[in-house]
Image (cartoon, rainbow, N blue to C red; front, side):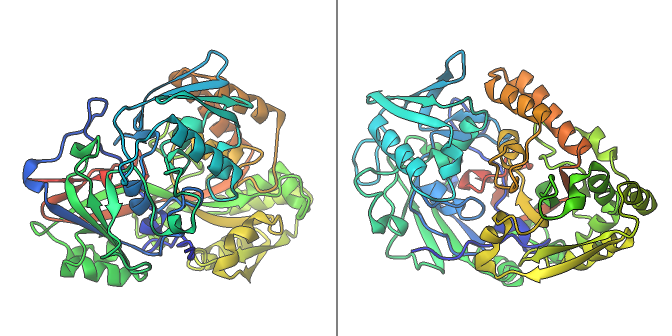
Length: 515
């Protein structure tokens, strides 16, 4: 059953809807502690704002929905609490020297919830189905040429081209392993067969209301999951979600900063994460196909100079966030704090740049009005209007939001995206096929840098290239990032939130127990 994707919400709504957090798992390869024995029968109860789209491996959406499907499915790789890749279902991986062949070695003894073995053939079948089936994950595997399973524990992936984001994708929805016998059936949407740490309790689960997950005793990494039961409730209203946390219907969740005073120690624990999502004005039409002024770098720089980002953080986020001029996660390898000084608030300077570009009287632009933009629209209208850019907001129904942004109808639009790993952010925003690069913009310098990053197997050298890509994006004003949104996690006594923003995957592994 496919139901609407929960759209990101502003300050009191966006954070949980985007699904943010860190990853914890206790195994020899990880940097985290095992669950305490006393908590072995405990329950983690969370709320999410929207019903999961589907549990079919080809239709998995990230964000909050990951709390459910990441519990049901194994992924080939995992991200630890600092966002670093670690072994998952694949105990090891190795690229060829030309970064065109990736060999994965699987763990032995893994089983699907129906008792059948997890092997290389199952991995191959899942990857082949994801990359051949239209869905939100298909593009993550666009670089794959073929998938081979020479023996039960070996998967060989041959690439059309090097892909620096592929390993990260294997720790996300593109890395799940489905049961070949059942994943093509309609039942997979609500009755998935996976090899993950939990199974969906069909008797207690009510689609669209609550999803109850029971821990498997035979799971290979059971020690990483201290909760015997996980309950994920769908509560669309943030105030209702906060009330559910107070009432004990849930025991962990994000809370709006204005409501934190109602959650005090020792009954509750509070943890603030500085940046979990980013609000960015996408200056998409960089060739001026729909809006000629955007082809001029001076115009794009002027747009960046129109915003008092610090004031926006104070007034719109109540200081729970940070101003920025870059799209990257501040915990990631591409982030460069010095770049935040590139565009100061300077409306008069912005007007001069517009005049130099041939637009002394400014110009008009139509942008899509979406569920998550409404709170920000008056501020953006005023700021752009102050430099001569008149904004008209065109309402777009929620179910048409994704297609509207991809349609090339809107030369500029506002997005709120969960922060993620550097390779993924690079692919999404700077690749010619990235879903935020909707006009498929290219540049010779950027093309060269992207190719270098994809080929580079040394993480430190790759990080240096990603920083160059970040600088290119800021200097050339491909985007006008506005601010990064923080989150405030509240947990009941005995449960702790382990994330710091380094990894933003919504997974049960971001929670632990305390004595």
